Image (cartoon, rainbow over all chains, first blue to last red; front, side, top):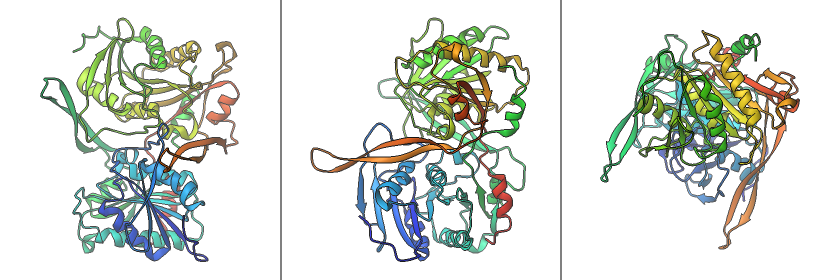
Length: 261
Length: 261
């Protein structure tokens, strides 16, 4: 199904959640190509807000598609997390050297990391001991300019590959402000801000008089720290948050040991 | 839409991911009822493996259903996370005092916490500053015996409510072994085990000769620690893991500060 890699050639798995047809993934592939053999597996339709969903109860399909010349690309009816699983088991038959997810159309900073299909795909790779990065551009539009982002991808991937020994579960959440490249002040290592959407549902009535609800929400930052990703982005930095999949709250664990269960 | 609560009466929101028709949610409601006014919002169909998915691109419906006498219950076409958001904004018009999710049919220990709709719904409540618990029984069957689990729910909810001041983001992942109540050795505060599924896709051909794939997997525990949830469950304890939604890996954050981005 795939050609043999050249000796010492890095295998770079590219996935996303906006579908194989989103401009963001094309930009990511182009930025990744100088670093090795790029293989793409992406959903056949947008999967934003899918979180860490996996497909258990229906069969998955896998189709070859043309995306960028010289790059193998596949599309599936599965979720972003499924893409990683399928790539390792059915396409590469081994783990890639690095997994890149995105470039997402829209922010995945702060609490968005847990809703994001882009970050969940990257996290799936990290669980599988594949160093992994999720990239997001703070511009939702299909016409967003990904040129500055491509330079950021290039810088970050080069720095990861320069380190011979990185943590095998390395997982970075990279958000890029939507400004010209020369206005970007730098790349800042951050923590996840405590910022979230204050959600409301808009209530409407359908033509049959039955109520229905649309999710809407206003973004609010409750975090005043200057090392948060939201702070960095507001100040024209690229934010890089190292992410973990051990969700244990060790502080509360210690407190609970005195409880009387 | 709802009756007024009595003075000082606790409001207990019950959600799940197995749908409002699953036996597990009925057991949870019955166990919760002695503690206050129970309100149920649950998906109208099973949503296992939905992770932290939210519904952005389609309208949501909300229907009143009969579940247990004296308990208001609603069903929606949304995800488990949507259930929490809808409950707060459209049903309760305030935050409940506690949110209980489950009882899930099947385990949500170790890495399952990130795939689990049950835990994602509980996490959504925690983000919204509602103390929250996800309960799971290690028995997938619809005919599972939830009686021992009801006693565990009762013990844990009582202990949370006994503490006048709990962390407003308190979030517990409770897994219950599928054994008779008298065989349960106790309730153990644990960390999330590094244990996961070694996944494979089974390849088949459809009647038209086209390939498709089913996700299958073997569970493997890589964690030797005796305070892990997997260890506790294997040794007939109920596991309680306090969970956080700040996914920042602070150890790696420190290391990355020396990188040259």
